[in-house]
Image 1 (cartoon, rainbow, N blue to C red):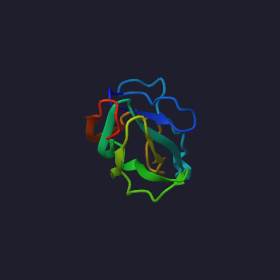
Image 2: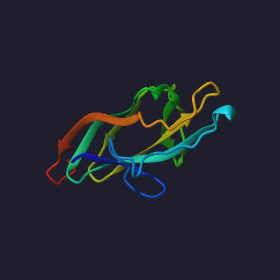
Image 3: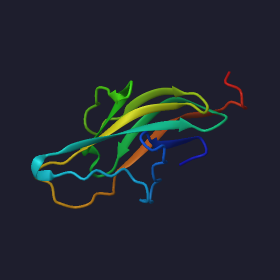
Amino acid sequence: MSDYLKIKFAETDEEVSQEGEFDNAIIFKLKADEEEKDSERLYIEADEDYHLEDVVIKIEGDTAEKWALAPDDDGEEGEYKDWGESLDLGDIDAEDTKHFWVKAKAEENEDLGQYDDVLITVEGLAEETGGDLW
């Protein structure tokens, strides 16, 4: 994903696919006629020798309003932000992790199909620590 961080699946510790790749994408199979919702626990891992400050997770794409983000609450879903809104995760120390949840929904009136236009993006400041954590 970058030289500073990785997004991984909490259940398997496998890295989530980067933009344009779909070999390990976040996939939800939802029934629109039942307006299903499903969620996945993920985490951000700061790479060695980097401290991440003011980390914000965003959902971008044509169907971003069908995705929601929530903080992790001891392995459970915290309170979700409104559909399509960003999530502030704060700071993440070198070689540390911060978990969060992503949820998608299907709506009865939507067309059937596979949507691959949504990106989970990360904003913040990556500061090199030189191997020491302050």
